[in-house]
Length: 168
Image (cartoon, rainbow, N blue to C red; front, side, top):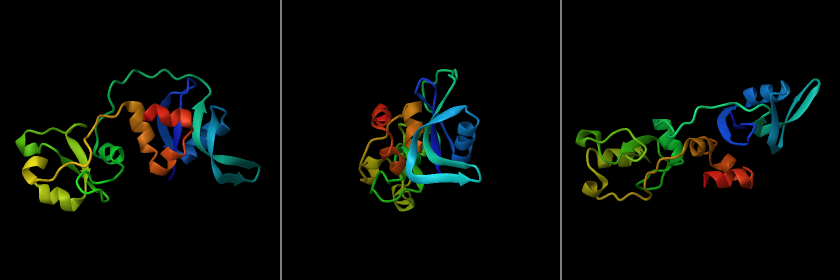
């Protein structure tokens, strides 16, 4: 199912919701469509609306300030766009740069997406010990970046320019 980005009334990213939830928010006049998919429409007996890609809430929602995006395996795969940090192929697992056996932690800066073959080949060694250099260094996304990255490569490229620049 497609994810729809939800913006606060102040245009700051809040979260992503399912397509069904986004349509319900629009139909209840709690949100307006800021950007829609160009060719897709939702039709009903008395309804014909564009499929929302980005919606904006009509009322401002106060959100507690979050300094960091919470770490998760899914978040690491999304951050690295499901590409192996060692070979560039499709990644299905998460690898610890400094292995847990050597004191490495579950954190944004110590984990990268990896294909199962490279994860197994690296085993309990650092990239230097395994002679497997990283193609890109891990980084810690901001909470807003994490939400925008969660939209996926195709959707991210189709976002309005002003919104895509805030995540770059």
